[in-house]
Length: 356
Image (cartoon, rainbow, N blue to C red; front, side, top):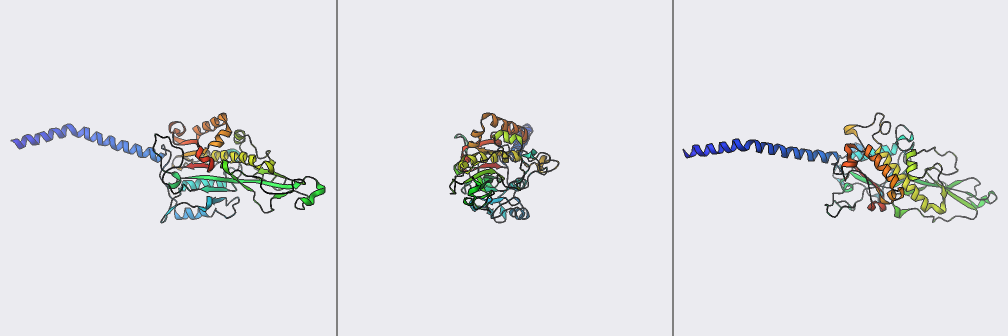
Protein backbone atom coordinates (compact mmCIF):
# COMPACT_ATOMS: atom_id res chain seq x y z
CA UNK A 1 0.00 0.00 0.00
CA UNK A 2 2.83 2.38 0.91
CA UNK A 3 4.58 1.56 -2.35
CA UNK A 4 1.42 2.37 -4.34
CA UNK A 5 1.14 5.77 -2.60
CA UNK A 6 4.83 6.48 -3.27
CA UNK A 7 4.43 5.56 -6.97
CA UNK A 8 1.32 7.69 -7.18
CA UNK A 9 3.20 10.63 -5.66
CA UNK A 10 6.02 10.43 -8.22
CA UNK A 11 3.46 10.17 -10.99
CA UNK A 12 1.66 13.29 -9.79
CA UNK A 13 4.98 15.17 -9.51
CA UNK A 14 5.88 14.08 -13.03
CA UNK A 15 2.54 15.19 -14.40
CA UNK A 16 2.87 18.57 -12.68
CA UNK A 17 6.52 19.24 -13.55
CA UNK A 18 6.91 17.70 -16.99
CA UNK A 19 5.68 20.70 -18.97
CA UNK A 20 7.47 23.39 -16.93
CA UNK A 21 10.69 21.38 -17.17
CA UNK A 22 10.22 20.74 -20.89
CA UNK A 23 9.41 24.40 -21.53
CA UNK A 24 12.37 25.45 -19.41
CA UNK A 25 14.73 23.23 -21.38
CA UNK A 26 13.21 24.45 -24.63
CA UNK A 27 13.62 28.05 -23.52
CA UNK A 28 17.25 27.42 -22.51
CA UNK A 29 17.93 25.81 -25.89
CA UNK A 30 16.30 28.77 -27.66
CA UNK A 31 18.41 31.25 -25.68
CA UNK A 32 21.55 29.23 -26.40
CA UNK A 33 20.66 29.15 -30.09
CA UNK A 34 19.95 32.88 -30.22
CA UNK A 35 23.20 33.72 -28.43
CA UNK A 36 25.06 31.56 -30.92
CA UNK A 37 23.21 33.20 -33.80
CA UNK A 38 23.99 36.69 -32.50
CA UNK A 39 27.66 35.76 -32.15
CA UNK A 40 27.78 34.19 -35.60
CA UNK A 41 26.25 37.29 -37.18
CA UNK A 42 28.74 39.55 -35.43
CA UNK A 43 26.45 41.56 -33.13
CA UNK A 44 29.20 41.45 -30.50
CA UNK A 45 31.73 42.92 -32.89
CA UNK A 46 33.34 39.76 -34.23
CA UNK A 47 32.68 36.26 -35.53
CA UNK A 48 34.43 32.90 -35.48
CA UNK A 49 37.51 32.27 -37.63
CA UNK A 50 36.93 30.95 -41.13
CA UNK A 51 40.41 29.71 -41.90
CA UNK A 52 41.51 29.57 -45.54
CA UNK A 53 42.31 26.36 -47.33
CA UNK A 54 45.93 25.70 -48.22
CA UNK A 55 45.18 26.68 -51.84
CA UNK A 56 43.47 29.94 -50.83
CA UNK A 57 46.45 30.83 -48.66
CA UNK A 58 49.00 29.88 -51.32
CA UNK A 59 47.17 31.94 -53.95
CA UNK A 60 46.96 34.91 -51.59
CA UNK A 61 50.71 34.86 -50.93
CA UNK A 62 51.39 35.37 -54.64
CA UNK A 63 50.27 38.98 -54.17
CA UNK A 64 53.22 39.75 -51.91
CA UNK A 65 56.47 41.17 -53.24
CA UNK A 66 59.65 42.70 -51.85
CA UNK A 67 58.81 45.85 -53.80
CA UNK A 68 55.02 46.05 -54.06
CA UNK A 69 53.38 47.50 -57.15
CA UNK A 70 49.91 47.43 -58.65
CA UNK A 71 48.96 43.78 -58.84
CA UNK A 72 51.28 42.72 -56.00
CA UNK A 73 50.56 45.37 -53.37
CA UNK A 74 50.98 43.56 -50.06
CA UNK A 75 53.72 43.38 -47.45
CA UNK A 76 53.72 42.37 -43.77
CA UNK A 77 54.48 45.05 -41.20
CA UNK A 78 57.95 44.29 -39.73
CA UNK A 79 57.80 40.99 -41.67
CA UNK A 80 55.48 39.53 -39.00
CA UNK A 81 53.07 37.04 -40.56
CA UNK A 82 49.84 35.51 -39.16
CA UNK A 83 50.13 32.80 -36.52
CA UNK A 84 50.09 29.19 -37.60
CA UNK A 85 48.81 26.19 -35.64
CA UNK A 86 50.12 23.26 -37.61
CA UNK A 87 48.33 23.43 -40.95
CA UNK A 88 45.84 26.01 -39.66
CA UNK A 89 46.53 29.62 -40.67
CA UNK A 90 45.04 32.16 -38.26
CA UNK A 91 43.94 34.49 -41.03
CA UNK A 92 40.30 34.62 -42.01
CA UNK A 93 39.36 33.87 -45.63
CA UNK A 94 37.06 36.91 -45.54
CA UNK A 95 40.12 39.08 -44.89
CA UNK A 96 41.69 37.54 -47.98
CA UNK A 97 38.62 38.33 -50.09
CA UNK A 98 38.51 41.91 -48.83
CA UNK A 99 42.21 42.41 -49.54
CA UNK A 100 41.93 40.88 -53.00
CA UNK A 101 39.13 43.37 -53.68
CA UNK A 102 41.33 46.27 -52.53
CA UNK A 103 44.13 44.88 -54.69
CA UNK A 104 42.01 44.56 -57.82
CA UNK A 105 39.73 47.55 -57.37
CA UNK A 106 36.07 47.59 -58.34
CA UNK A 107 35.10 45.58 -61.40
CA UNK A 108 33.32 48.69 -62.71
CA UNK A 109 36.68 50.54 -62.85
CA UNK A 110 34.81 53.71 -61.98
CA UNK A 111 34.91 55.87 -58.88
CA UNK A 112 31.51 54.60 -57.71
CA UNK A 113 33.00 52.19 -55.18
CA UNK A 114 35.69 54.62 -54.02
CA UNK A 115 38.02 55.27 -56.94
CA UNK A 116 38.76 53.99 -60.43
CA UNK A 117 42.12 52.45 -59.48
CA UNK A 118 43.63 49.75 -57.27
CA UNK A 119 46.08 50.01 -54.41
CA UNK A 120 49.76 50.04 -55.15
CA UNK A 121 50.85 49.29 -51.57
CA UNK A 122 49.04 47.95 -48.50
CA UNK A 123 51.16 47.12 -45.46
CA UNK A 124 49.34 44.62 -43.25
CA UNK A 125 49.86 44.64 -39.48
CA UNK A 126 48.87 41.41 -37.72
CA UNK A 127 50.97 41.88 -34.58
CA UNK A 128 49.11 42.23 -31.28
CA UNK A 129 52.19 41.37 -29.20
CA UNK A 130 51.04 37.75 -29.01
CA UNK A 131 48.28 38.77 -26.61
CA UNK A 132 44.96 36.95 -26.62
CA UNK A 133 43.29 40.14 -25.45
CA UNK A 134 42.55 43.30 -27.38
CA UNK A 135 44.82 46.34 -27.03
CA UNK A 136 42.02 48.71 -28.01
CA UNK A 137 40.21 51.06 -25.66
CA UNK A 138 37.75 49.28 -23.38
CA UNK A 139 35.39 50.81 -20.77
CA UNK A 140 36.56 50.21 -17.20
CA UNK A 141 33.31 48.43 -16.33
CA UNK A 142 33.60 45.98 -19.23
CA UNK A 143 35.81 42.89 -19.56
CA UNK A 144 38.65 43.25 -22.06
CA UNK A 145 37.56 41.41 -25.24
CA UNK A 146 39.62 38.87 -27.13
CA UNK A 147 41.94 40.28 -29.77
CA UNK A 148 40.61 39.91 -33.29
CA UNK A 149 44.19 40.41 -34.52
CA UNK A 150 45.44 37.47 -32.44
CA UNK A 151 42.50 35.28 -33.43
CA UNK A 152 43.08 36.02 -37.10
CA UNK A 153 39.74 37.65 -37.95
CA UNK A 154 41.08 41.21 -37.95
CA UNK A 155 44.03 43.25 -39.19
CA UNK A 156 45.39 46.77 -39.42
CA UNK A 157 46.62 48.62 -42.47
CA UNK A 158 49.62 50.75 -41.50
CA UNK A 159 50.65 52.06 -44.94
CA UNK A 160 48.69 52.65 -48.13
CA UNK A 161 50.06 53.65 -51.55
CA UNK A 162 52.62 56.37 -52.24
CA UNK A 163 53.37 60.06 -52.25
CA UNK A 164 55.33 60.66 -55.46
CA UNK A 165 57.69 63.58 -56.05
CA UNK A 166 59.50 65.05 -59.04
CA UNK A 167 62.53 67.32 -59.19
CA UNK A 168 63.02 69.96 -61.90
CA UNK A 169 64.98 73.18 -62.41
CA UNK A 170 63.79 76.49 -61.03
CA UNK A 171 65.68 78.08 -63.89
CA UNK A 172 66.29 76.24 -67.15
CA UNK A 173 69.71 77.90 -67.42
CA UNK A 174 70.82 75.95 -64.34
CA UNK A 175 69.41 72.58 -65.36
CA UNK A 176 72.75 70.93 -64.62
CA UNK A 177 72.06 71.45 -60.93
CA UNK A 178 68.96 69.24 -61.11
CA UNK A 179 70.24 65.78 -61.96
CA UNK A 180 71.49 67.19 -65.29
CA UNK A 181 67.96 67.01 -66.66
CA UNK A 182 66.00 69.90 -68.16
CA UNK A 183 62.73 67.98 -67.69
CA UNK A 184 61.14 66.67 -64.45
CA UNK A 185 62.51 63.44 -63.00
CA UNK A 186 61.48 61.22 -60.14
CA UNK A 187 62.79 62.22 -56.73
CA UNK A 188 65.09 61.09 -55.16
CA UNK A 189 66.05 58.48 -57.81
CA UNK A 190 64.71 57.36 -61.18
CA UNK A 191 63.62 53.95 -59.93
CA UNK A 192 61.71 55.11 -56.86
CA UNK A 193 58.08 54.11 -56.44
CA UNK A 194 57.62 57.03 -54.09
CA UNK A 195 57.25 57.43 -50.33
CA UNK A 196 54.87 54.96 -48.61
CA UNK A 197 52.00 56.84 -46.96
CA UNK A 198 51.90 56.04 -43.21
CA UNK A 199 48.44 55.92 -41.66
CA UNK A 200 49.82 56.54 -38.15
CA UNK A 201 50.09 60.15 -37.00
CA UNK A 202 53.48 59.59 -35.34
CA UNK A 203 55.08 58.28 -38.54
CA UNK A 204 54.36 61.14 -40.92
CA UNK A 205 57.01 61.79 -43.57
CA UNK A 206 59.84 64.30 -43.08
CA UNK A 207 61.86 66.28 -45.62
CA UNK A 208 65.26 64.88 -44.67
CA UNK A 209 66.64 64.28 -48.19
CA UNK A 210 69.09 66.97 -49.29
CA UNK A 211 69.00 68.52 -52.74
CA UNK A 212 69.97 71.81 -54.38
CA UNK A 213 66.91 73.78 -53.29
CA UNK A 214 68.43 77.01 -54.61
CA UNK A 215 68.31 75.87 -58.23
CA UNK A 216 65.93 72.91 -58.04
CA UNK A 217 62.32 72.46 -57.05
CA UNK A 218 60.64 69.29 -55.77
CA UNK A 219 56.86 68.94 -56.05
CA UNK A 220 54.89 66.03 -54.58
CA UNK A 221 51.51 64.46 -55.34
CA UNK A 222 49.52 61.36 -54.38
CA UNK A 223 49.34 58.28 -56.65
CA UNK A 224 51.02 60.00 -59.62
CA UNK A 225 54.27 61.87 -60.23
CA UNK A 226 53.55 65.59 -60.85
CA UNK A 227 54.53 66.94 -64.27
CA UNK A 228 55.67 63.54 -65.60
CA UNK A 229 54.08 62.29 -68.79
CA UNK A 230 52.33 58.93 -68.96
CA UNK A 231 50.80 59.03 -65.47
CA UNK A 232 47.53 57.13 -64.87
CA UNK A 233 44.29 59.10 -64.73
CA UNK A 234 43.12 58.34 -61.19
CA UNK A 235 39.74 59.62 -60.03
CA UNK A 236 38.23 59.49 -56.54
CA UNK A 237 34.56 59.43 -55.67
CA UNK A 238 33.52 63.04 -55.12
CA UNK A 239 32.06 62.06 -51.74
CA UNK A 240 35.56 61.09 -50.52
CA UNK A 241 37.24 64.22 -51.85
CA UNK A 242 34.57 66.31 -50.14
CA UNK A 243 34.99 64.48 -46.82
CA UNK A 244 38.75 64.98 -46.67
CA UNK A 245 38.92 68.32 -48.54
CA UNK A 246 41.68 66.86 -50.71
CA UNK A 247 41.64 65.85 -54.38
CA UNK A 248 44.89 64.26 -55.68
CA UNK A 249 44.15 65.51 -59.20
CA UNK A 250 44.51 69.11 -58.04
CA UNK A 251 46.33 68.87 -54.70
CA UNK A 252 50.13 69.04 -54.78
CA UNK A 253 52.72 70.51 -52.45
CA UNK A 254 56.43 71.20 -52.12
CA UNK A 255 58.72 68.58 -50.62
CA UNK A 256 59.52 71.00 -47.78
CA UNK A 257 55.88 70.63 -46.65
CA UNK A 258 55.77 66.84 -46.96
CA UNK A 259 54.92 66.27 -43.28
CA UNK A 260 51.64 68.19 -43.54
CA UNK A 261 51.09 66.79 -47.03
CA UNK A 262 51.53 63.20 -45.80
CA UNK A 263 48.93 63.85 -43.08
CA UNK A 264 46.45 64.93 -45.74
CA UNK A 265 47.35 61.90 -47.86
CA UNK A 266 46.96 59.55 -44.88
CA UNK A 267 43.54 61.01 -44.13
CA UNK A 268 42.56 60.50 -47.77
CA UNK A 269 43.74 56.88 -47.87
CA UNK A 270 42.13 55.98 -44.53
CA UNK A 271 38.75 57.31 -45.64
CA UNK A 272 39.15 55.72 -49.09
CA UNK A 273 39.80 52.23 -47.68
CA UNK A 274 36.93 52.57 -45.20
CA UNK A 275 34.64 53.71 -48.04
CA UNK A 276 35.75 50.85 -50.31
CA UNK A 277 35.12 48.22 -47.66
CA UNK A 278 31.77 49.66 -46.65
CA UNK A 279 30.68 49.47 -50.32
CA UNK A 280 32.26 46.08 -51.09
CA UNK A 281 28.84 44.41 -51.35
CA UNK A 282 27.35 46.97 -53.74
CA UNK A 283 26.67 46.05 -57.35
CA UNK A 284 29.69 46.40 -59.67
CA UNK A 285 32.13 46.71 -56.76
CA UNK A 286 33.46 43.26 -55.82
CA UNK A 287 30.94 41.48 -58.07
CA UNK A 288 28.60 42.48 -60.87
CA UNK A 289 25.41 41.54 -59.03
CA UNK A 290 26.65 42.51 -55.57
CA UNK A 291 27.02 40.31 -52.50
CA UNK A 292 23.99 39.26 -50.48
CA UNK A 293 23.26 36.97 -47.56
CA UNK A 294 26.08 34.64 -46.55
CA UNK A 295 28.26 36.06 -49.33
CA UNK A 296 28.38 39.56 -47.84
CA UNK A 297 31.97 40.69 -47.35
CA UNK A 298 31.56 43.96 -45.46
CA UNK A 299 33.59 43.81 -42.22
CA UNK A 300 31.74 43.45 -38.93
CA UNK A 301 33.72 46.29 -37.36
CA UNK A 302 35.65 49.20 -38.84
CA UNK A 303 37.81 51.25 -36.47
CA UNK A 304 39.40 54.45 -37.72
CA UNK A 305 42.22 56.44 -36.17
CA UNK A 306 41.01 59.10 -33.74
CA UNK A 307 43.24 61.72 -35.39
CA UNK A 308 41.56 61.10 -38.76
CA UNK A 309 38.11 61.58 -37.24
CA UNK A 310 39.34 64.76 -35.56
CA UNK A 311 40.66 66.10 -38.87
CA UNK A 312 37.40 65.28 -40.63
CA UNK A 313 35.37 67.31 -38.16
CA UNK A 314 31.97 66.60 -36.64
CA UNK A 315 29.91 67.22 -39.78
CA UNK A 316 31.95 64.96 -42.07
CA UNK A 317 32.19 62.24 -39.41
CA UNK A 318 28.40 62.38 -39.09
CA UNK A 319 28.18 61.88 -42.85
CA UNK A 320 30.39 58.79 -42.64
CA UNK A 321 28.28 57.43 -39.81
CA UNK A 322 25.12 57.94 -41.86
CA UNK A 323 26.73 55.98 -44.70
CA UNK A 324 27.58 53.23 -42.22
CA UNK A 325 23.94 53.06 -41.10
CA UNK A 326 22.99 52.27 -44.68
CA UNK A 327 25.81 49.83 -45.41
CA UNK A 328 26.30 47.66 -42.31
CA UNK A 329 23.85 44.74 -42.13
CA UNK A 330 21.45 43.86 -39.29
CA UNK A 331 21.28 47.51 -38.23
CA UNK A 332 24.67 47.05 -36.53
CA UNK A 333 25.57 50.73 -36.70
CA UNK A 334 22.62 51.68 -34.49
CA UNK A 335 21.97 48.55 -32.44
CA UNK A 336 25.46 47.30 -31.48
CA UNK A 337 28.09 49.25 -29.57
CA UNK A 338 30.80 46.88 -30.80
CA UNK A 339 30.03 46.45 -34.50
CA UNK A 340 29.91 49.00 -37.33
CA UNK A 341 32.02 52.13 -37.82
CA UNK A 342 33.84 53.78 -34.91
CA UNK A 343 37.29 55.09 -33.95
CA UNK A 344 39.98 54.56 -31.32
CA UNK A 345 42.89 56.69 -30.12
CA UNK A 346 45.04 53.54 -29.85
CA UNK A 347 45.01 53.38 -33.65
CA UNK A 348 46.68 56.80 -33.92
CA UNK A 349 50.06 55.04 -33.85
CA UNK A 350 48.93 51.86 -35.63
CA UNK A 351 46.66 52.62 -38.59
CA UNK A 352 43.22 51.60 -39.84
CA UNK A 353 41.59 48.46 -38.37
CA UNK A 354 38.83 46.18 -39.59
CA UNK A 355 37.67 42.73 -38.56
CA UNK A 356 35.08 40.00 -39.08
